[in-house]
Image (cartoon, rainbow, N blue to C red; front, side, top):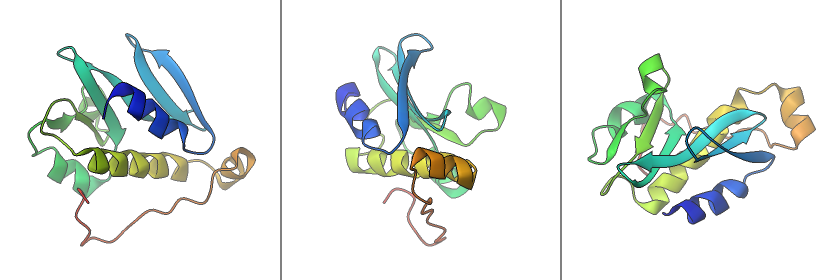
Length: 132
């Protein structure tokens, strides 16, 4: 996935906003809360997203994926796909979708209703492979 594909994908979620900040990073928010970031690592696109506990532990073991600088060091469950092989495009899209769901689940029901954000559908199946 490149930056343009990332931005087009994130723009497809309901009630999102896009800002460029933090050293020219594309930052995507839902209800004012960040759910995905595309910045740079060693001159290449790096994609950062919020994730669940199990995926945080499992996916950071992959080459090209690490705890997100700054965010993970503060105890938050954020990962960064920063080089190949990392995640496939499909896996990255799944993780960004999960990130959107996790972030919007933290909004009040009233706020989600005002913004037209559907009720989050979080997958709590412990047998689900976090990379699928």
